[in-house]
Image (tube, rainbow, N blue to C red; front, side):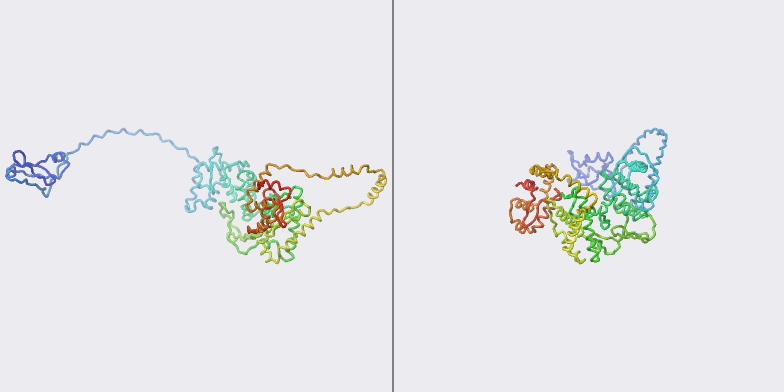
Length: 573
């Protein structure tokens, strides 16, 4: 038997050739076997005689075990030799002492990473950089709500410390708001100051420098509160009251000094908490300013006397306090750390607020301005103006609605008072003041009077009246002539603004008043509003924009003659 060695992976059928012999077709497998990629072929034996005697083509099956072909070895490529690297010279980097200082400052947070960017970390970093100076020529801007060193870049730190160096020498130049707030935070912690007084002086110098710049709104919002806290937290030789008066800061603390008013400042302080701004009234002129200021102070003293007769103080009428103490932290809104160890003590500020330090923790007991006090202030100011207009016989009168005191009425009843009692006290005080201010005392010198009489008798016969008409004409020409002011562009804008401020009901009421209709009260009732309240609302808006009332209320509404043309033009009638 001849043996033919082949390799196959699956059962391979045998086929007959032209000679009638069975052969194995391995055309599809030879290439795989030759390349050695198919190691699963098995060696088989082939007997052509046995195959040719059978009509059916036998099928060979893969044996149980298969030989593994020997793979052809792949030649290993010869590696190309790499040239040895040329050694480079080591360049020594110059150390930056400023950067090293900043790095040390930042590493102060490594002691407690969870306290990063807190007030205590800021204080420790500020003390670390307290004496640092710089002269950085570039400027890198900073915009940060709560500026702190830890979040600032290298360029920003150098920009800030260079600016601070100049400020400490008295050269305060404008810069980013965040840099200024950062410096204020340092001053509140007394960083870089000689003492507490020096820190206060530096704060005031900074405020005055930027008081008329775009930074003014921000500084005016925070510094008044922080300066008050500065006087509470630090021991200062000067009282807060003296400090406020010396630096003319009274307008920043109207509620604190509302009970400590004088003839010079009472009108200003009460007007600052009032809804009715008396300084916008046309009656508030340079000629009447002193009259209004002095009269209001007299009225305020009269109200104090009225309350004293009921064993009530003005403080109890306007302020209330429940006596509770709440925890207090100085310098709200600033990055401040309570770094001082203080003994137990208590401080009382103007207005009645009390601050107490116990075991180095602060508490505050506040006196809160009553909600109706704003209405009470509005009523007093307008009532004084109403009475003074009547006293001087001003050509236009205004009215004050008693609805202003409705929200304060319950408070008055608690004190045993009423709106009528307050009304009467104010009116009587204004009358007494005006009579006293216009009363002229004439002192007669009898010696001079005798001489004047003797000279008069000597010249009496020489005087003749030649023309009565001429004399009357002279009297007429001597009467003051009221000048008619031309309407300016600003007045036109004021009327346009008033037009936009009025609602439809108020405009319709003005149209009805111009038309002379008598059913305005019915119109007001139909719109669920009292006629007096409707008129008061129109006049309040008129005062805000043109500085005066434009109508008066009787049984109906009537517009003042001087404003008829303006109102007619405004409502396009």
